[in-house]
Length: 66
Image 1: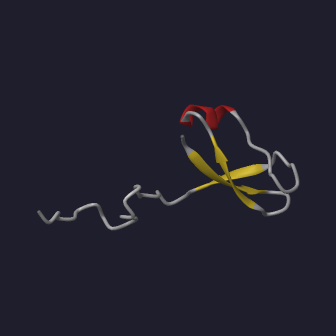
Image 2 (image 1 turned 90 degrees about the horizontal axis):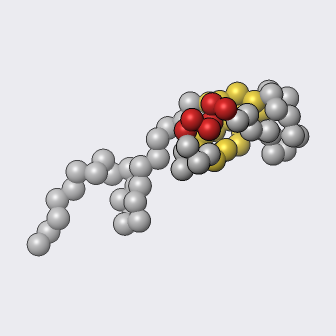
Image 3 (image 1 turned 45 degrees about the vertical axis):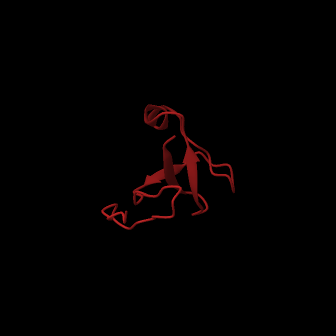
């Protein structure tokens, strides 16, 4: 499920919007959850890497002891 970050042009509030597909983010314009304005701008976000094992942003290249 893609997550996009937006900033409201009216009040400056930053918020996340969730979409079922990335194509939906181009079709649907989210509204600010603070003031309700539809004048929002999509922001560039850093990719979040992580898993259920608590690896976080470790780079993913770890050796496993046996």
